[in-house]
Image (tube, rainbow, N blue to C red):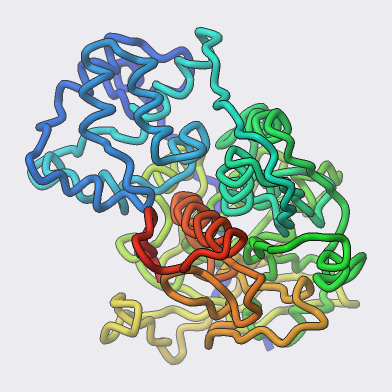
Length: 470
């Protein structure tokens, strides 16, 4: 029996922005950056003697130095300062949750707005493209040793970048029909234009990297096959593409229920997917927000998000939450789905329950506690859970890899070597769903380890890139 209370959530009217907000707030600038605005923002940097922003950056970019170069109009030098530590500033500057990383550590943010580090990084990356500057690095002489890289996300791209430039023959195997992993099928085009991903592909191919799409390691060929083909080391960067389930009856076989990363993958690979007008998205992370904004752009008129905590606990980027609300999507806080309603196998609605916040859980956030008797019903055409992802272990078939409690690959915390000595792993399939910047850093760590392994060197002594994110 359905609850008596029915919740109808009309789309909110998008907030109208004063045009001056777009002009004076550097954070809102998106294309055709104003050099003067960038320099003014750069001048806000205090050039701290002990810059916490560097520690806050998963890649350890020298943020004060590239900002100092920028404010002195040394834009090209500023860009190459970032490239000393990061393989993909154009990507990370667009999609990383800076407020939880570098900007969250900025001293300016203690009593006001932090320096817009992400936008300054993006300005430099885009300035290089707009001014047709060379973005390629020289490649060393071929060493004749082959490395297989499974997955073309930010971790795999970074491993290929470092090893190819050191002269190793790298081949990337991507199970999807497109290059880029979650960058291409998990992040909408409006956040990460596809020509930026294409530039990463061009850079790798320019240094001799082979990219094979549409081949799933573990199904079409195995790691053992790769060994027999002469690959002396492998890197697993398969990401975390398997949707975590709500655990509700009917979730698997009800038409109208589709999971967040599955929805994004199907839409972003070109499928013409009609999910109806009223869409309920469950979750509080960037994937949930990406799903909601994509659904709006594809014609669903009434899209809203259910989240079991409050906005303060949402793990999504503050900027993404703001953009979501500006587009008219409402977030129904302190609510969670408890039952799927269907007729003839097709979704008709979702039964939910109100929550209140109790004591903190292992994540440090207050635990949501159901309020008895608070059930309510939402009529809906589509339910999209977007509550996290797990690792798909197809790639390791035929081998017994040790795994961590959450199903991720267990690796040496210093070297990222798996329990199979010639195989290394990094990114989301080690960390769980995390930021692109953390995957980039792990790619750097793994590349150093693979080079040491191939050259018969000690994997741990005097490392250039010590591991820090496990």
